[in-house]
Structure formats: C-alpha cells, structure tokens
Amino acid sequence: MQIIRTIVWVLVVVALGLFSFNNWNPVEVKIWEGLILETKLPALVFAAFLLGLLPMWLLAKAGRWRLKRRINALENSVRASAAPPPPIATATQLEAANSANSPESPAT
Image (cartoon, rainbow, N blue to C red; front, side, top):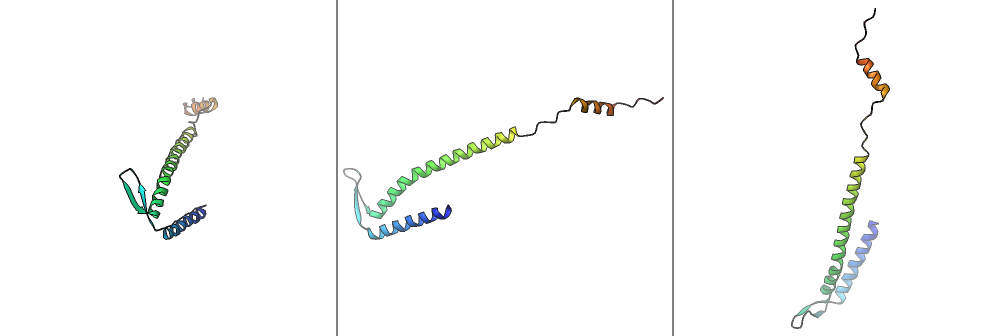
C-alpha cells in the first residue's frame, strides 16, 4: 500500500511540475474592489491545493487521534477485567489447613 501512495504522490508532483513549466504566466486575482493580487498561475494552483488539502488532513488526523484514544481505553478496560480473581479457598482446603496447623494430640 505504501508503494501505491508513493507512486500517486510522484505522479501528482510530476503533473504539477509540468503544469507549472507550461503555465508560468502572471495572473491577476481580484480579492476586493480595490485589492488585486498579481501572482504566477502555478502559485495560485498550489495555494488552492493546500487550502483544500489542509482541512481534510487535519480532520483525518483528529479522527485517527480520537480512535487511538478510544482503542487504548478499551484495551485498558479489557486488561482490568481480565485480571485473575484472587484464589478462593474451598471448604476441604480450609479443613486441611486447619488440621495441619493444629497441635498434634498426644499419643497415649
């Protein structure tokens, strides 16, 4: 899966490089009535790409963080409930312990 992700990112970078090389033209972006931004077209495309990528990346990171916290909490609760209970002595074990600890009756 990692190789596919790497191939996709390499293709995206190559496509952006080719686009940048072929479209290195100045463009004017009208932000407000009196405010005009003059920039190169590839910079505008890259900024738009980052504006779209950043919120989704942050959302994915937040979701992964939340799920990791939930998984850790569930694992800790399983560990706590799976701890072996203390041993319970049965009646026969108690009788055997009492007879072993009691003083021996003198032989006649």
